[in-house]
Picture 1 (cartoon, rainbow, N blue to C red):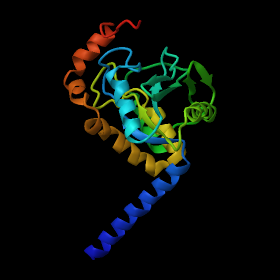
Picture 2 (picture 1 turned 90 degrees about the horizontal axis):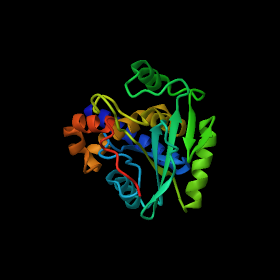
Picture 3 (picture 1 turned 180 degrees about the vertical axis):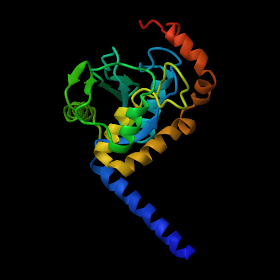
Picture 4 (picture 1 turned 45 degrees about the horizontal axis):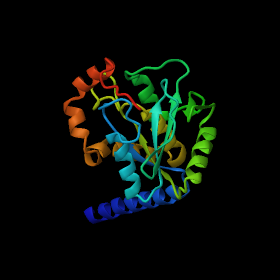
Length: 232
């Protein structure tokens, strides 16, 4: 009996793995993980910042010329830029009703069960506003292809929080990460990507421990504007 169950379990894993591999071949993005817990300096999506270098290093390891990070839209234009020879594309979803930094648990539960409604948000990249996700992704993929991108773009969500515990709050860009994963990979795969994404920084971000052990001080400094630095 146990041997039969083991065989079934292994078969399910193999089928799921084959499904992910097959779908990823035709998907524009590869969901990777959460980038940060809090900001160490602001702006952090800028050449030479440690967080930016983490993105570029991962892209190089995957043989990708481009990497993408998604955000919860604020005042930024979310422009693309180069980190060394890697193009970092930014895209944000913009909630026309409000901008909030706390957790809307009803939205979290609804998104987890039903996905993100396609008509709920607008999207922004390079200062351009898009009414729907398809148009936004067409724009992003055009930029990536012009940079020589082959295959899916590794995709992170920013993950930073401004208040509260960053372990409880998944942070900036998480809903868009879920929406894109759901759109291109489906419900079950999205649950897998969420679990993997939340574990990712513990294994791949060399600054994760520092961020978590100093998040209260860093958030206080950030909210006071003391983490801002001048860009020449």
